[in-house]
Image 1: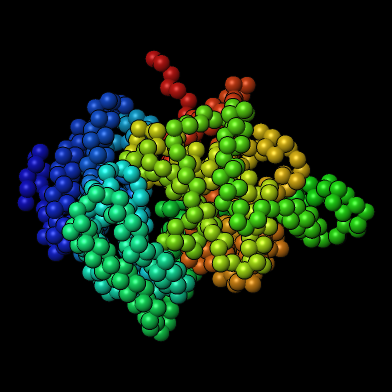
Image 2: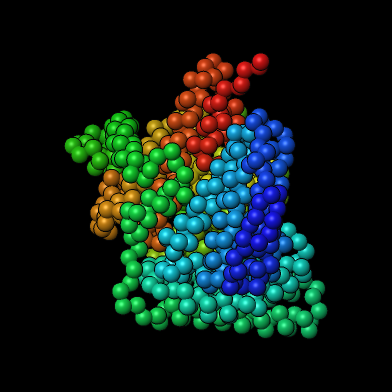
Length: 605
């Protein structure tokens, strides 16, 4: 029993990993430091409250990183790069203890006495802690999702990012590898009833990504200047790590499961995951209903545009009575214009400069030319979910590279490659690039890294990030992107329909038992997607849940916020002002940004 400030706290002895034990005193110190805060809470928006909360945030993050060193590395905080914690019940218990201690510390603050920025941080930390508890105690993905044990990505990050001299990074890599065989042995004990589709994805990524140890590490060593004898030791350990990674993949492949768990997570888990991951103003059912209505709206607009284009491409041919069939005919004709498979990545690289020029010419946003964007082939350890993605530098590594990961078509059959390229045709490849790069993800994340709050970057909200990318597509179309050609408009409608169909598909599959045939029909017949794209999306919905709703959820709330902001600003409204003000709040949930953007300044007394 420890007395402090007239209060007492009892400490519970925990049987936990020694590495975690070292971190626990800091938790309790944070709790003690702020245990008096509530009694003396100020009633106004005081700088003293903000200063105290800023100190709390720093302590919160330091304690979090000790327990989640891999997340720290990916965030650009490299103090714990060499640590690899075991995936066991002791460390999960330490995480639960962390959430309880932090919740108690957080409760000592009165959010109304904090500045606007810190008030958002308060809410984000609170939701994050609730979500951690839910994930560990309710979702329990560590029992049924083998892909959570794939650590190759964090090793690759240490190897490839230039945040420190190469020898220092290689030695951290080397130290972290030491416990990798034991890590995988411990992982084997945790997996009880794996989802077959997730197991297959994990096997593919582990086998493909093992070359990070067997090849990439050795290639980097040759450039390091590390003494030959030391290199020999490091290479020996790397080979052991590569073998352990493959052995874990073999274990998963040979694992006997009598009653495999379904990839469908069910309504209860779905709503819980939606609550903490999406952080929308509504629930998953409401978003699904909104998506169904949006699909109807898009079909009507697409039918109108397709009727206008029909004579241009089909002369006097009879127009199908079925409007969806008519839309599909026009889209199919336009989709025949696409690059060759060998030029796909090069074309994506070529798109970046014109997008920058358009954004500047229309004065939509201020772009930062000092932040590098690197287009690269999608790494093997990331394969199996999306064909294109952005990997941004962490909030502690603001000057790091942002990678535009492009899926490879190497080894595909001619038929499959043609289907994929028709999906990403001359029109939609442009929309893909503005979604992923400018003014989409890349631009938003550059702005996010400029915000002074680390919390908003560390605990960033995926729905806001994806929603901005979708919103930016619409903004570009409104600004005249594509010379306002009806062909580009139709293809944007189709692209936007993907966002809507993602939500319908994900919710229907995981909570309404939608089967594969119905899912493919939704994507190909109602959303006009190519067969390869639809099959890829069916795979994605089997190995993920809720994330597919983030696009429409975030877009829907941002679009609604813009309309409210327009009404508030009246003739003073400027799209650039809205964009930059919105992005200035970092990657916070839209519902929280909305509170601040629409808040009226307090009247002076």
